[in-house]
Image (cartoon, rainbow, N blue to C red; front, side):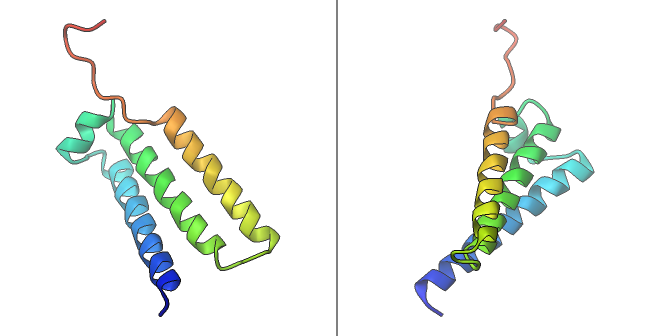
Length: 100
């Protein structure tokens, strides 16, 4: 395997792991403590990780369709998913008792 193939394989595995991690949070309603502290609620954490994971998988799959319209569509869809994740579900943390 070439370096490019290893990179896409690792990227796909990481994307799949993120998507499964996010889906597990959405299904069970539970998240690790560090993740819970970084987001306002478990639903937002699950959506954030699921969107990023699926977007990464789409980019990796899209690289196999070099030069075709499918690659462009997958890339644009991945960028839209990441944009949604960052704008709508970004980590914000919880407000402490002293803040308004």
